Length: 413
Image (tube, rainbow, N blue to C red):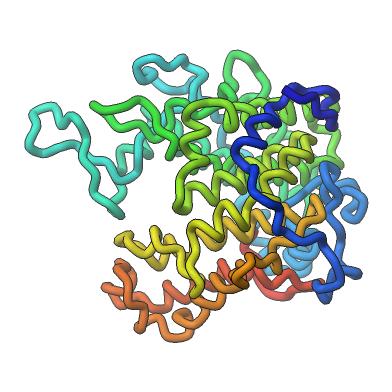
């Protein structure tokens, strides 16, 4: 174990685990002049994020120019404030609100079931559940599981933090602080920093590696908390406690059997694992862990998962292949955004054979112009929802543009 000194002081982190996971040669390039707008754009600087260029706000994924564009868009600003006003009446949320925990779990453990698993109609008790790819079981969003609680937390923290950014109204920050204390800090109500019981399959297993994909709202929460940095609603000690929570979660990702199994995935789950790990580590102030994760991406993901045409083959076999192809490329773009914070350029990094992340974007962009030509299984294609397919790609493509200034409505990642 190596001691890594970050914002939280000395923290025991398994860099030996990182060395085992990401031991391939580093192909990612240092950020240079190849980014036309690099000199003028706000800079993300390690564990401080955009703090120096963004009035003390500590974001990593949410670029200041995107947030300023939202502020300059009266229609979008008004919609965000209206949503935040509703959020003032919602929550707080806690994993301890469950009526009962799954076997082996404590009330503080996050629990959920896999989205595509359904009761077996041939069995009296429905057990074990069976898989129906692409068909969501609404039971996963019920009160007996935590998926909707975490989703609601992410949604409300995003609205409240953005409303605070737009208005400086402390009501929004105060309520956000209440949500944060309950979910991350208070020992009686907080979520334990792991997902050992996420995406279980009733009748088969109480938790799976795939459950880590549900960390997207934890990513949103991290950015939201950074946007609240100017407010006194959270004390310095409380900010430290939240960062320690993320440090503990990142450590669990690299040391637990579930975490290691998810890292080994060779589909969108593996790419999202890298993004979540890098994001949570740098939010916690553990820059070395974030950097090592970003460095390994070209060899560990692009070389293994993407072909010379920019296709992620495992996503193309799904019943929602367009969705999942965009999903995995969007995760890679998010990781590339975090890479900027540790001075690694994944946007233009190339393998020895010339493959790069831009190949994946170009592959999708061709079909985005003519979505009817998409040759792989896709429910939206079958339904003739070509405009929806184009909208899906537009959200992916936005992450690649990285302009100095942007106009129009912004959909934050």
